[in-house]
Length: 150
Image 1 (cartoon, rainbow, N blue to C red):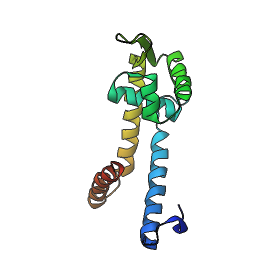
Image 2 (image 1 turned 45 degrees about the vertical axis):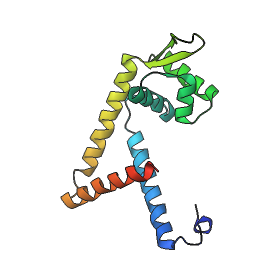
Image 3 (image 1 turned 60 degrees about the vertical axis):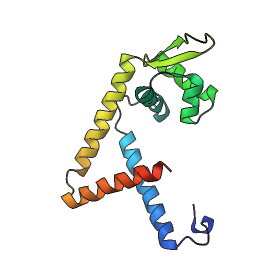
């Protein structure tokens, strides 16, 4: 977004702050994504494993909706994860036309190890900050959660 895309009432300093926050957020997210248990796993594949970890089994359509991708795209992702042994597909007990996608122990282990690595990297990155800087980050995290929920 450029300043010409902003509503006329948006002050330039707010625009600059929003841009700085966006760039810093993306840069931090990229650094965190680099900390993964399986190097060849894509971010999209990991997102599916994480969704299954947090929300339990899903149908292919539910996963596609959750990740905001097409059903054919999700099918390719799920096929790859299944071939790697990270997920299983089982027929739905109520509707045999549906298939539920679930994590395997190997898939759960990838999520746990990736989460551990990401948390460890971030802990190391903030270890050298002052107490005041850590307090500011804690406040910023709460504000960012609030903004993201809008």
